[in-house]
Length: 287
Image (cartoon, rainbow, N blue to C red; front, side, top):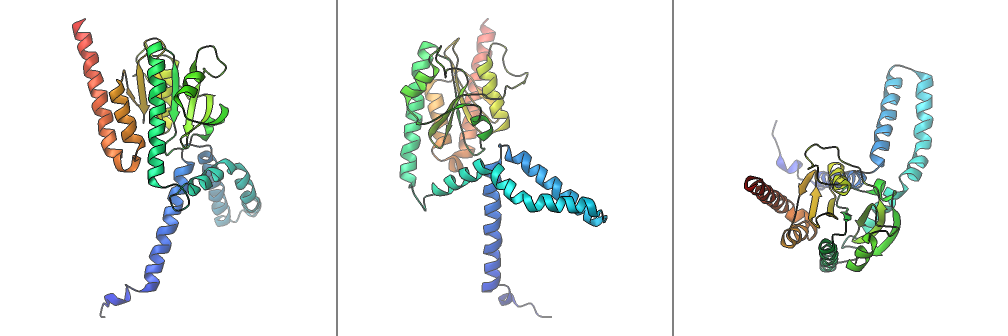
């Protein structure tokens, strides 16, 4: 039997390959958008229902199979209703693609404005020891935590951030969550970490920052009201007592082009963390 390579490289096979890649990419993007939201738990429930359906079909459990059929038939409508925030966020994400709207240059200017606004607020609050907790949504959705806050949907500016965290104002407790380069909510509740590696002198804001970093890939900035020190957390890691140069370098690396600079910025993250750890060790040795 002769093997003819020309039979493989046909238009039909190429179309099949493109078809598979498009479906795979679509599923990947959907799962990426759902990660970190309540929809993940609902998807697990859907998988369980289909599992029960298959088992009941194999074992001829007619009543159970009938009930599962009804759940699946009506489930499409229920899914649309329950997943409405995720569906809306997905469509908004699609609309922000360069094919439809903004260019990469405009995106870069928006990121620059975000970083400048954060820097202005951090510098003002750090010097005056005003506590702050700011979370930047990255790839993992933060819908679950956005729901706990007070809606703002405002442009990110240093003045607005400063006013939010002024003590004894209605919004100063809790976290500001930034999504799509806008302040989505203020006074949001974040999960508190129970890690034993967090220094005891750090307060609730710091534990909340570590907590959200343990369950999502969000970047969280903390300004201590006791010392004015700046901390950034991501992926369960803490960077304590950052200088202005340190946090600006990190934010530029993470926010300008996360995909391109992911490995580089992660390396910078550990370099900064190691530098701070060495400085703390030197202080303890001097004592």
